[in-house]
Length: 291
Ligand code: ADP
Image (tube, rainbow, N blue to C red; front, side, top):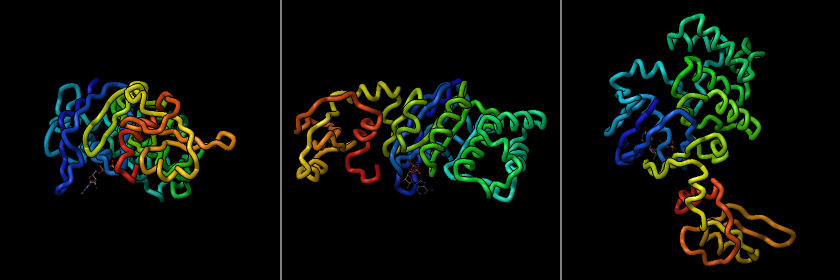
């Protein structure tokens, strides 16, 4: 299976939300990483046919998804950024309702609901009203609705937004398990959400795809640009102004900074192998207060 996103451009007034964006996806998990405003939601909405591109096209196995929209949507699961749940429904009522909207045959729907409720750990609360759910439970309910039709393509827009670290880990592991044999695209600006589960990371900057590589390759690509340096407290502001600092830490009384630089580093330290967070900072840190 191959989903080709070919040269997509989408402009709002004079803002290019997507600017000749191209990438080809095959089975596996992809992390779509970029700061707020980079174009992640616009890309996802375009793939889900919720908005139409101005230029370019999206092909599934060579066929235009717009020309074969019905067949395409039958194979698609989408989890939007904000939970869209009916709070007065019980979870089971909600899932049967969504299943009916998706035209899923009743016996298949029953089977899928039972399976997914068990997998995401919401079996015990299937008859509870959604308004009584915590944020993490709502996110898991949204994940179930995206998976109800056993989609081949799963689009997840910031699936861990608003969750605490334990809940994030739970959702992450679920995606990793339930996303087997599918094309899964997860948007996030939190590196750890995709660092260990994505086979490839797509970096999106100002609507452009600037990389689509394995985490290791991305890390290797900035080797030589990350150093641990000793810092005197008095120098902190100056160093912050001139460098990208991915972390500051003490060892005993000595303060150290992990510095990411994209030019010759002025301060000398010990070079270390970059992390994916360093990669993020390298590409998105400069001139961007929102990173
Ligand atoms: P992300 O999901 O990475 O935060 P978005 O795709 O939401 O980015 O937005 C990309 C850019 O397009 C931003 O500058 C945003 O303000 C703009 N944008 C998105 N949707 C609209 C819209 N409906 N009308 C006008 N501008 C929009």
